[in-house]
Amino acid sequence: MRKYHILTPIIGLLCVLLLQISCSDPWDEHARDNEGLTNEPLLERLEKEPESSEFLKLLRASGVDELLNGNNAYTVFAPENSRVQAVASSLQNDAEALERFVKNHIAVSTHRLNASADTVRLTMLSGKILDFVNGEIDGAAFTKTDQAGADGIYHVITEVLTPRQSLWEYMNAHKDEQQNAFILHLNDYNLHDTAVVEDPEDYYLNNEFLSEVGDVRDETKRFTYFVLNDGDFTAEAQHFLPYVNYRNHADSSYAISQYHILKDMLFDQAYDRDNLPAMLISRSNVPFPVDRSAISRSVRLSNGWIHYLDRPTLPIPNKLVDIYIEGEEPWGFSASVANRTFHRVRKDPFGELFTDIMVQNHGVSSLQVAYQTPRMYSTTYDVYWRALNDVQANVFQQQVGIFEFDTRPSEENPDQEVRESIYVFPYTNVEQNNYSEVYLGEFHLADYNRIVPILRAMGTATHGENTLVLDYLRFVPKLKTN
Image (cartoon, rainbow, N blue to C red):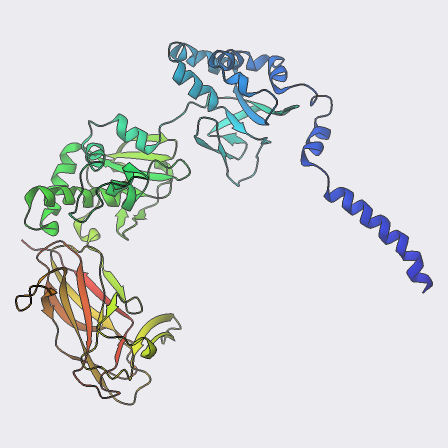
């Protein structure tokens, strides 16, 4: 008991000390680190900095100095006088450019020198986002750091932080290039008849490139984009045209072909020329081989890089990627069998987990499970399935049919809509404990469009004989030979 009483005041004192430490204000700590400087407003500190005098002139001329009124904390990155003098004349007669330039050197809140390899992205008053990493901001080094005022910090840097265009701004400024012109054309032109005509929340997201490939307006993201010269872009679109026959409409088919050339030339990470990997993978899983020798010039943007190619580097076979339809992701059923439908997690002989669907003992003759695909190229496809029969003592059969995505009135009953058959594969055995793919055959898709694959059970209500099971369907597009 005596030990308890002796320890009680010590523990209490430790708790008080810990409470004081935990409640300390980071700004108070910052003030202690810069004692003697924090009583002066940031603007007054900048006025006393010899190397910030030229930037201070632009700050006041732009009117941005009124923001530094002590109501908020800011970080100012002031370029050396000689760097500011080199660009000042180009800003004198453009008030908007001057304001944007100055704001690109000021970040909200306080940011000390970041000498680590971890990138901190700073949002500047210009709306641009600059990388702060390894003792540099946007590539500019520091000659003086962490100079504190009462309402912020300033650093002196070796280069000006001229606002760069985003990829979207660059495209709009270079409309004479065919790739850019086509992307901007998508603001008002719908590639497909089913496209949304107008999005009242965001007009530009009617543009399929922005909505489906990448929203290159976004300053928070980073992109790498490749551009072909006009002649190569036209030639590539013509070369790919046979794979995108859209309702036998020449103009629409050509526009879709152009889209499919450029959609695999945008990538989500930013790579300068020297750091480009040998292979990039597009969002649609197309492998893009990188040939640095084909890059004629590169342009740095606020949210990435553009690399101009003097020749095409993406072969058509690379674009013909396999399409997988997962069995556990059906679009619909021909009858209600929810209580007999199972999504199963299985492990293959190599230890890889996968999920499939099994519909068993449902009592429905010729039960159908429908799926839908993305838009598929107009070419011939080899079709495979993986279907695991591991819980039944018998072999059963099932079949796959390929149907048009668009419906049309039935000839027998005009009020009823039906899907026309493209091809129906024969019933195929689902052997016991077979983890391998099974080749079903091939079919030809004449039109660029979605399709509806249908998995159909045997025409019997007998349990065990009308089972359906599917891990995936795989569609392998074939290269055209003529």
